Image (cartoon, rainbow, N blue to C red; front, side):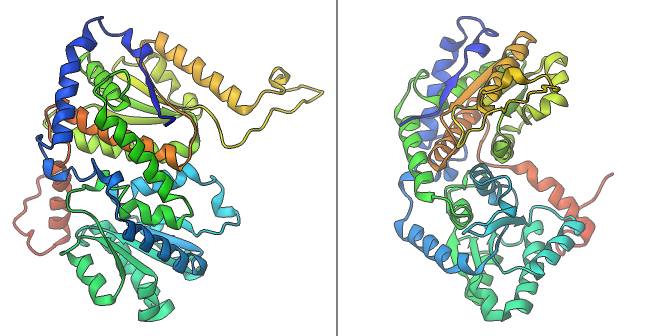
Length: 442
């Protein structure tokens, strides 16, 4: 396995020489809790062995649905919020061309709904869908989460008018609870194809379930390779107790050491724009898992070199409360060199013959050196390339490291009690039955 690697040399210089030996036992204890299921939230550990426990029949059904729906769908609408869509979007946008919407493709172009309550967004979305053939995946354990429920009601209404009740039902896939909930009941009543979100897998850890696999497969990507990469990383993370060889333990150790030294903000940085939604998924994964009981590293993200021209000044000379984790890609899918210009009015003929990857790698190294000298610890996640197998490795690596890191903080990494606060206020303000007793204090 050409696995991802963690280079922590530019972070260790900010720590004393005994730091790693002092924390190693904590890392191994946290890992033991995760693997043996003895820690907090252990009823949500189904994702740990998931890559090797995927149901072959379920995968076969997903592929059949792709064969059935893709030829009749210009667009595939994924309705979900948070973990119900971020993982799928992260993988799809990492693999597809940034200009896929304007290119001719065999697979439907995936768009998203249910992740916002913006009226302008839905007016424009519904106008688009009027003139396109499309299918839908609606993803929700309960079916009553406000954002996706509102989106599905509007889109379903339009689909019935456009395709008829039976035709609409043939184009809708419901991904929901196995036994209960509004969406489960609607899917049974209407005859939708239904996939199950496992009870023991929380939303932000669900990308390797049908929650992620259905949209990723519909977008034309190889879910078998994705799962193969995740299974390879699972074996490494579960079997190895070495901070040297196990990238998840290595990452959990260094980020917690830095946190204890006052570095309370972690910036996930990439130099490839198609990795933007990997960062968005990572922010939910770590923010929702660790940010509780007054604890946790604040996850932030930047896309370089673009953001060097907006946030670079702060990173270089602002408050020293952050460390950077750089996702560094070794090889691109394609290459292009800088051409020669006889006039050289822009003064960049010194770059002639160099590939953009070479220039980008030097921009990355130059940035790392500058920020490191400016007082920012740097952790580097080295990935060989971006394909389905590597993304499977990266997803499982981040998930496993998140579980270990959460246990090192002594929190439950698998709940999210604080998410409910805004919902109670919103329901009371909107007059939802059952919330009349909620008092709003402004």
